[in-house]
Image 1 (cartoon, rainbow, N blue to C red):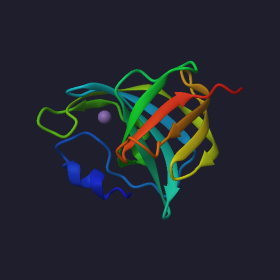
Image 2: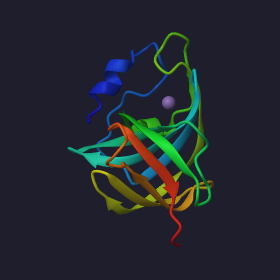
Image 3: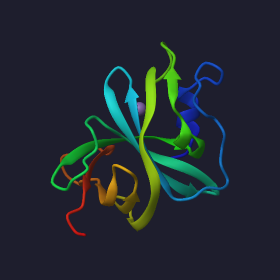
Image 4: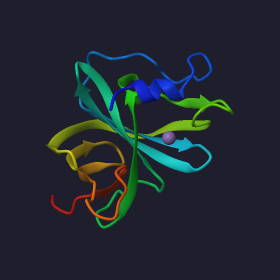
Length: 154
Ligand code: MN
């Protein structure tokens, strides 16, 4: 994935969302509470790809789990620009994702495993702390559907 999809869905000047591309960055995560037509939480992990820093992104329809034992569906969405990590504001009516966006949590992360169907990270946020797993089950799921949960091991 690249940022092409992100740029296609949004009109510069119509939405306050960022459009800058970042050549530098660090390993961070952000969760944005997004009051769109359906309330959801966007979980994003920074990742360096072809020289650019982007945010790998998943939309989670329920509040992200702070304890092990709760699994959430996480629908992968288009990569977002790295600069999106600081975005809070209102996407106007009629634009893609219209509604208010707040930062729910953010912090550094440490990569433990990063594979095609399995991402394991340690999160250092205020609400999300510890090891988290994103996994794309092979059976019974469309390609974009992942599961997101807090790992049991310390
Ligand atoms: Mn969203």
